[in-house]
Length: 410
Image 1 (tube, one colour):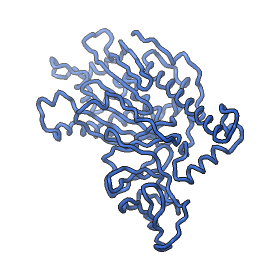
Image 2: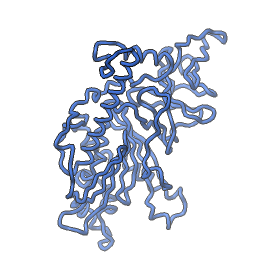
Image 3: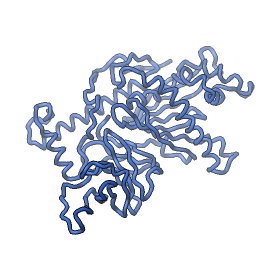
Image 4: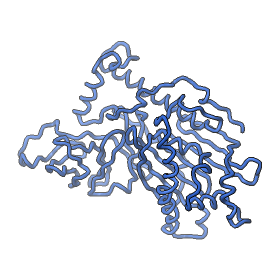
């Protein structure tokens, strides 16, 4: 996972007042709850007393109560109540929870993964996602794949006619993407399965987001053509638009083996002129999400779960020209990981008074990073990097490969 980034945890609607919610994210078990003002709180879920999961507990005012022994913790993580010791008990300051920076934006809850900073950066959200008033439906689920592979399954749209076929629900795809009015949609399946070629692909970048416009078409038939727009924003937002298909998907690592997905499906804007009720218009995105999870996701994951290697990085795939967006995503990801690693090494060296700020204390046999993390945990702040043994911490292949750069003029 990429350090020093905001990751989505859950839709805001999933965390209600007076009810803690547990979520595994970034290699940690976390608990999310709201204080009396509705502000969301994110803390480590394990009670420091004996490790009970606080998501099974209760919210009492501005505190969360452990389900095991009733210890209560404030929004800042301090323990204020130990029932077995009585009201006058002297509570050790070390008996506290680790808090994690958390924000709400665009109907989602975001958790910071990275260094402790006096000022955290703003959450990066492109206008394609923020500047819209569409009725939509949002759902979340997990998939047993590494997040890089899930992201890749969304970045390249040309797998669609090969994978999303032969289930009865795929006839909705045939009708929406391939069927013509002249044939009353009956030619949809044939045209959908024949549209396999990428043409007119153009990838642009503003340093934060990658945008890819292209046509998915049938070779030799100019009438069978679909315009597609795919956008990726770090660390894990994919926006796809191929009308009537219009979705935003936020992807966050649960750990090295699992990925959390927040899927938002927008209404077909053409229905606005015919249907005034937002409730009725939301029914279609809600039904689409229901089937997305049970049909299209299953079709995709049947392939993705068996991909080797399980983690994608530069150099592991032999890309073709149509994979330019995928290649540039991996290149930018590798750069962000390396920048975060270098910054962390320099900060550790400076904190320990080392002259060489380019070396990581751990690499020189020093336990300084461990000591620094222990001090942060003692003070109730999240360690600089969550305790997940991520394979990309050993990311290799940082050099340029042939597949990383394309000038696509198909």
